Length: 271
Image (tube, rainbow, N blue to C red; front, top):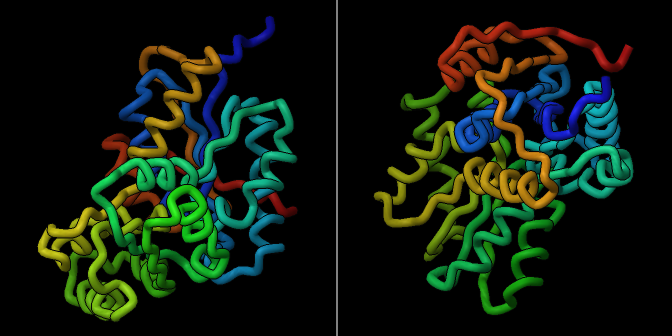
């Protein structure tokens, strides 16, 4: 029997736990969808890898998710979205829809008339690509965009240094730099960063709009599925969580986000 396309799963990938923020938002916005999440923990972080390496990892994971019959590939990683979006589009062809985490946020920002100066923080790979600045200014040349690489945040989060003096000191060190002076909004240009969103908001005394891409991406995905008549409403779908290397922290964070007993499957796609 041929499977109805709307019943097929949504594939989501990131280098580590960060994409779980997107997966969790998708689960909340689209409770009838079945998710297959792949965390490439053996190769994290992507932010300090070359463009060619990020493309190689991203396209291989995309191939795997297509083999799992995914109807959508969600690139839940800003570095992969900035560097591998076009190759992933080419890889998927007409086999699946593709959603990244940059374009929906750009759309959100340029449609908000209250923003004049926008800050972007992310990995070196995302910031050096210039994708956010290019796309935002391309859509609205009247906006001012300041971007800054914050490479220590991902390893800090992956190692579990959150909500403590160490993480607060690192966050303060980055956000106090003059590049981010006088901003109205700050784009969290890495899917790991929503985990420390409250600490970032607190630094700004909650006076700067800290933009978490996860809910924006989930709503964009919902609209795309409706537009393509692929929305599923299956009761209590069973999700899969795969990693390329097991880490105890990934297990802890995944259970925290999904409030259920997550069983991780370890799989090596690069044998």
